[in-house]
Image (cartoon, rainbow, N blue to C red; front, side):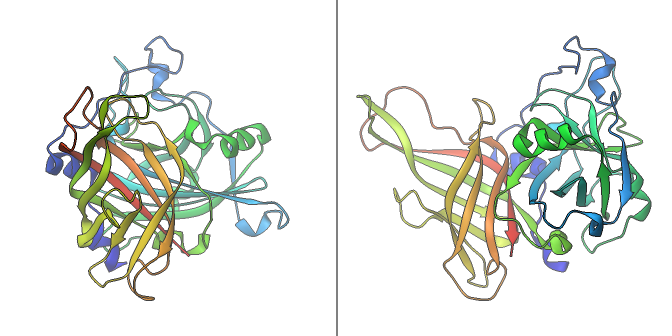
Length: 335
């Protein structure tokens, strides 16, 4: 896992390097009244620790990912402390039948005291629906990470699982610690459409923007007039991965590692991340470089925790170029 140590950089560092601030999400309680219930501990989801082998082999397996950080936590006035700005975690979940498997690695936080899946949209808090806390007794340690946890629980609430599979972005991962009992790091879930070998889930890695700009050019707008539209992106990620378009105005993003392994991306889906931030994305990755190396086995990319990067509004002069700083975490899913 030495590779992962070299390439993961936290979202807080990303925002500072990009010259933009981390968005502060509004405090909204689960009951909508700003009460302590917003900490999300109400309605714990009962789960029994089991083996993944007990899953129905005929049931379809669904895969999900979340890149957790402290800035995503939602404080509640008078509620428990939330938001460890030094903390990071990368979490993967597989749902197959009534078995829910998790693989999570974390760093920059104290030892976790609880690990949950809550139901709630971005910027809101909600109750616990799936509880992985019993698995925290089996923490292992990885190079470059403070710890990792894997395991499987059985969830009896079929409706919860059906809703999670149908609308993963309406649920969030939350890792709690003694210093941040309301939640140290958090993130909404995204579906990994092509799946991956779950036994090797912790081989998937995250590389964050060290320095990045979204590049826009003033062009004629479809509805008339002139507006800034995407021309390119220029970014350096952790591990010195270069990110740009294959060619300006091509609309095809690419990532090139120092070992010359490389991939291009094709959009699968996008999720709005607020008016001040570019959307979060899921992209299919196609190898465009060496057949071996860091990115050679990459087949899906998630752009998460976006900060800034939105095109300037209003009219502009034909051909004008605007470069807007942005931050993001890119999660690379391996075959």
